[in-house]
Length: 132
Image: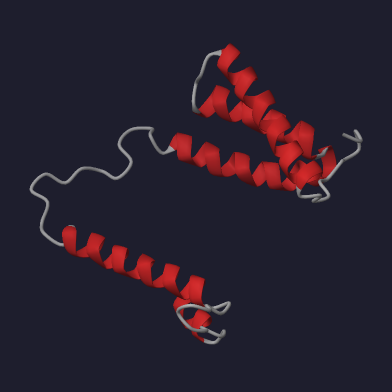
């Protein structure tokens, strides 16, 4: 679908690519890699195993739910506090890291993202009801 949509944009030339060149190239690469993966696993597997053995499905589900929750509350609470809480919960619940590591990475990443987007790129970030 992306390749089809990219065709309708201007492809440009090799030395002067248009807006459809990059999406079309990525879509083509994705199609080729998907086909290679399909052909690689086309053979019968002598010992099939379940896709999600045991409770291994729980961590990806928690990851998706936490990302959805982040997207829903970032405008309400604000970028800084939401990002900090998201990273702390992600590394505590999903990654199961030590608290020193969790706090240092969460605070450092939040500060770095704030500096990059708000100060350097001047992207307005949600402040929320807290005003941060």
